Length: 148
Image 1 (tube, helix red, strand yellow):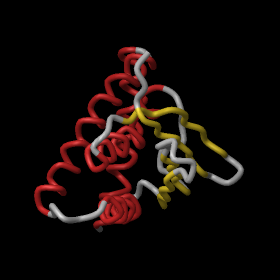
Image 2: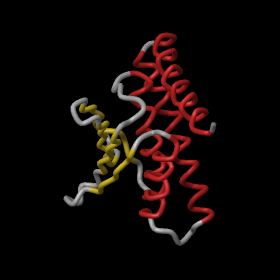
Image 3: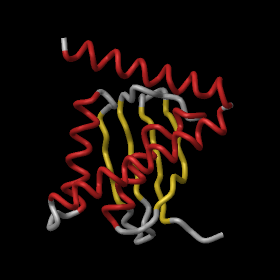
Image 4: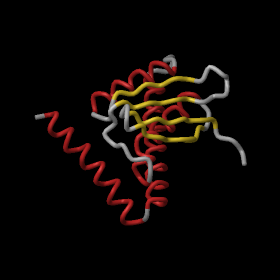
């Protein structure tokens, strides 16, 4: 019974993204979802930090990867760049949303961006989001915010 409820919730989120795209246009929907999920991610990470002040960022990442798997988002992997450029690479295998435009583009990764910004104490931005249909992987690069 619990899995059916989860499946229904996932389908409703996908429908919500599509509906939001239709209502306000895909660019505006993308911005709305990005801001909403970025803030949610930051708040979740800040709660985590209050409850686990000595925890390393890796503990937060591991908990959220487990949450993604249990909630039906997909199997998430997170890698930090070895080049000291601050980039973070996130992949979701078998993601429940596969679109890379509109509200869907921002839904899955903006939460991660907000959470990682809070945990790492630096402002991060979504850099690229792609979907590889042949391997069913949604990929995102998150990078430190640059002044323009």
